[in-house]
Image (cartoon, rainbow, N blue to C red; front, side):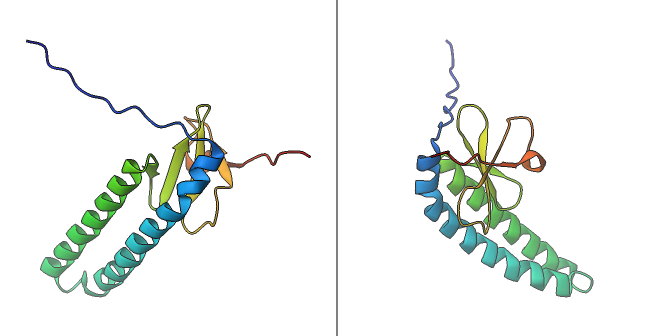
Length: 124
């Protein structure tokens, strides 16, 4: 008997589609960022004196990050790094980083965040 593995197709976004779901992604990201920021501050204060509590905080931070990645993926975005989301446009990736207000950049599939370049503005 053959078993099949379902590979989810990656969504291809127009810039307008990516911009349309960006407010949802911004809210999800802002919430996760604020939660982790508080925990990281606590971790910095206690990591040298309370290893057990530090481990609990590290686990919680990982849980929040994993939840964020899952939410972004379900919306069709590609979570990259910390608070960076890519959107496949078929010839590369639109790239957004919290707290940017819009999608201003893109990069090639192999370029990564450091290869970001500003989107060309349409000419009139």
